[in-house]
Length: 440
Image 1: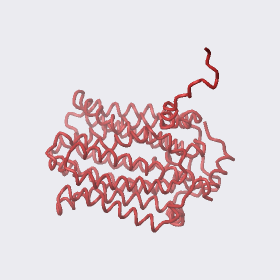
Image 2: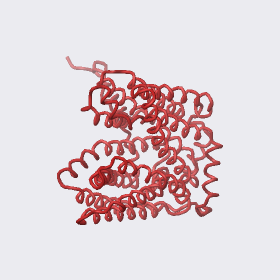
Image 3: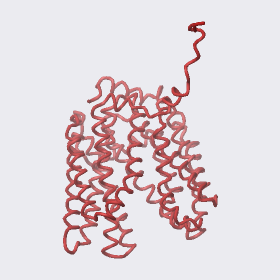
Image 4: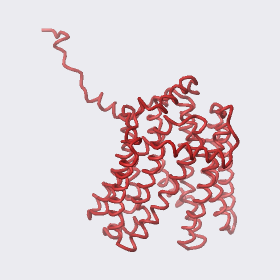
C-alpha cells in the first residue's frame, strides 16, 4: 500500500517553534554596515574588558589601597555624563562615521599610553587616572553616535532584531571578556593586556573605516547648550520616551546591588559563589538575547519595558529573601533576563520614533540615565546594607523597584498605551526611513 498526500504524517512543529525563538538575523543579512558595526563593537568590547581588568589591578599593585581603586569610578563618571550630553549634540551635527572613527583612534592612543607606562621600570600612578577620565570622555562622545547610526543603517521593521543582536554581542563580551582578561593578566602580564587592547582598537578602526558616510541633516545646528536643551525638551514632551528613562532609573536606583555581592556571598556562607553572582545577570541576558525571535512580533513596547523592569525587581527581591545560594543565583539570572527584555524594547521604542535629526541628543540623554542609575544604585545598596543588613537591602530594593515601576506605569498612560503599529511618531519615522533606503 502506498501513502497518499492525505496519509502523510504532519510535519513536526518543534523545529519551527525553535526557529521562532532564535535571534532574528535579518539586520545582519540585510545591512553590510550593521555587520561591520556589530563586528567592530565585538572586537572593541573584548579589548576594553582587558583594560577594565588590568587598570584596577595595576592601581592595586602600585598603591595597595582599595580606596585608590574605587576612585576610578568617580574619575570616570563626571566626564561620561558631561561628554555624553555634548556627544549627543555633536552626533546630530557632524558625520557620525567620522565621529566614531576619531573617537576610536583616540581610545587606541590611550591604550598605547597605558602600554608605554606599563613598560616603564617604575610605572606611574597619575597617568592611569588621566587615561581613565579621558577614555570615559571619549566613550561619552562616541556612544551617542553609535546608537544613533543604527536606525540609519537598519530597516525600520528590523530595529527590534538589531537591538537584540547588539545586546547579545555585549553580553557575550561581558561573560567571556573578563575571563580572558584574567588569564592574560595572570599569565602574561599587564603590558600584553594593554597591547592586545591597542590591537583591538586598530582592528575595529579598520572595520569602522569601511562604514558608509552618515552626514547630518542639512539644517543641523552646531553643538551647543541650546541644541542639548532642544533634545531635553523633546524628551519631556514625549511622555512615553520620558517614561522609559524614568523606569530604567527607578529599576537601577532601587535594585542594583552589585556593590554588596561580596557581603551577600559571605552572608550565604558561599564566598565561592561571588564570581557566579556577578555572571548570573549576564547569563540571564544572554538566554533572552539568544531566544529573542519572538520580540519582533511584539508591538506594545511600553508595556514590555515596564514588565521587564518589574521582573527585574521581583527577582532581586526574591534573591534577597532566599537563603539557598543556588536559588539566589537563579533569581539573579532571571533578573538579568528581565532587564534585557526592558532594555531591548526601550531601545526599539527610541529607534522607531525619534526623528533622525535628534537621535544623537536623545542617545546622549539615554547615556545619562544609563551611567548614573547603576552608580546611584550601588550607593543606595551599600548605605542600606549598613543600616538594615545586606539581605534586607537587596529584597527591600527589589520591592521598592516594583512599587516605583508600578506607580510610573499608572502615571504615564502614554507609555503603557504605546503601539508601534499606530503611534504617530513611529509612523513618521517609518515613512521618513522608507524615503531613505538603508545604507549598506
